[in-house]
Length: 72
Image 1 (tube, rainbow, N blue to C red):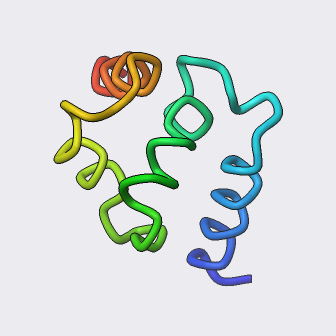
Image 2 (cartoon, rainbow, N blue to C red):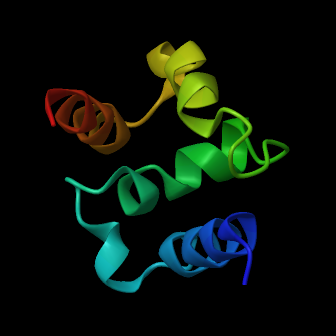
């Protein structure tokens, strides 16, 4: 399995909800914001950059998750 395929599968699983919905995990915390603002962006195509560009329109949960991601 290619690395890109693995990443794509991992993102599909992560964006499908479940345990990934924790506020510290941007994949779950930002799913609704991703669907609304960045759905056309493919994995590896700058999803985080897209979300950061729309930061003033994001949910508080997504903003917190992105901030937490920067700290790591």
